[in-house]
Image 1 (cartoon, helix red, strand yellow):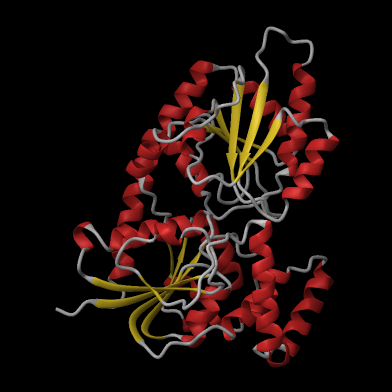
Image 2: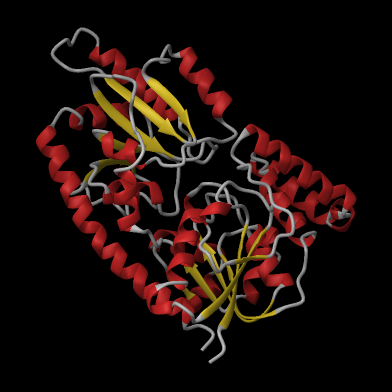
Length: 416
């Protein structure tokens, strides 16, 4: 029997949630019960990222030239800007898409926020290399560029698109998409709330849109948490960890302000150990967040750790995982913390509230510094409650694992 040909397309291969989930899915499709059934190719719109070495053997990378520098770093953003400039000028993207860029830029200005990355995905998609191959199934694993590319430039019997973010809050709309979802036979969202948000924009797609939970390698995460090193700063207190990209969406300045409140409230309380907050990740807001930390005098209290290859020993070594963001799709970082048996505090927003049962395996808080600080202080010194929530979180993740396995079967059965 001939192998089914599947093409995956994604925007970048930098260390983030969707990229991690895709690599885990690729590993599953090339091993175990699926081994030998699929011929899998991958195309990365930006040709850029720091996770190429984590791709499983057997994935054929279509990109001719790749960069191993993450788009989340300063050097990576410089490379990406050069890629965008080449697409606009050398490859004619500015001329070809002038009316599209102008129309959508004006619309963003009217809405009060210009999202340059959203504008560029159409240009990058349409100036990317096109391959004269036919596939049984094409999978656009992220909204934006990869979905535009799969819709317009891939020859496949069946096309599927993944949505990993609150579509409305992220700033996507029909004007940007140019009917790309009309080319999709199936649309998978990472959570029910993401599905609801997407269907506000595309209500006619309800019959082909279903939830596909993030696939996470539980055994690997547990094993990785026991390798390498975690904290080595000699801090004798309570540790909070957060993992995420330092981007506008995450709004980590709220966490920094919350930490200032925590520090102030702990003054004059020698009976309580100090608290230190560690943020693991990188992104274009690093300088801004560094300035926030300096302004509040938190250089020894709120630590920007940068991106690390293995964050799991840090999560395992923390007393509490906190994830305060403006909006989410479904945070893989929260799922990983749950796997490692950590109590989680998260902001009460789309994507987060689906993962936490209030008062059972974690706590939800309002998206403001005072609420975050009060919730942290109400939990971080309660060892019994931290242990109870952590145990429930680790056990409850097994339901997510079963749902993800069923979703994989739905995906691979699409070519029929």
